[in-house]
Image (cartoon, rainbow, N blue to C red; front, side, top):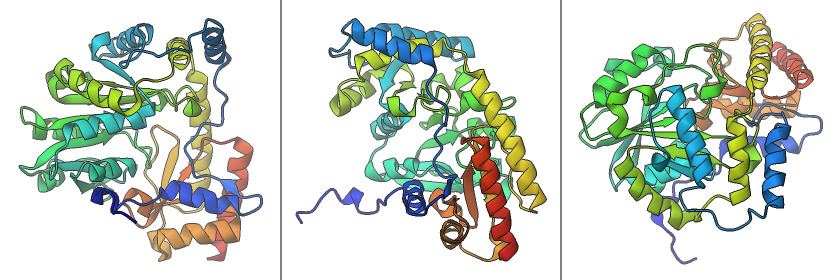
Length: 375
């Protein structure tokens, strides 16, 4: 084979997909792997897409996104507390597109990116493709929060960015005001970007401090957001990126070179999404969280209490079994699929997702309990 880009050499297939595919080979396996809402996209959003098609909104959209959607996003973010204009908004192919555009656009060969771990593996993947160096900031030893001392230990003159994800995938934890103060103190006034992955922001069960709302950091903050999780629109593949105007002017060129634009009629439906009340979904996730937390605590398991998203990150170190082996045995012996902590840079844990029907959660918890009793 003719050599490829050498930055692709370290890349591996997503562990989440790998264990999901393994589970699909087992009959009646309870899938607690992928973080995909089991809800259907709300009817008003689907109706808006149908109407847009009927209106023949099937032609090229502007590279940056259609004006009505960018205006609606700017209004939404401004109401939330992040003052911005439509010109600062870039509509992307999911949060994945936003993250790729943001990180590829700001990173140079040899730059370092601080990634608080455990973390979604995509951050490391993008940094690697960009030729940058992903630097793990281990949060497990600090109750999954960021401390001044821990952050200072990984901060160097090569640091170009720090990625924040709160509520967090895979732990469900929310970064505290103290954690964010540590980040602000470390990067304010320095040539370091803060990349906020806020895809679970609307699925927090209480206060959720957010550096994207701090106007003093506006010149160095890039916000990545998605319609996938809060609106049950994973298959629609729409997200957005917001940042300082001079930066967005350049990142638009990178985005246009990658995908040209997000489909026009899909963007029209997203305008309706922003005006749709989806709080009932978050309430249901909270009910499912409470059920799983109660069951897992009765099993004697330990984990950070999830305050958002729809994940629980369970400590399996007391069992003395590696996370990949544990999850493989869990699939084959108990017909329950979870994701090893090693897939998130945290060996000794596993992630379960509770964004599935309650009857599946009940079955999964029953089978997990029986499996643990046999260990």
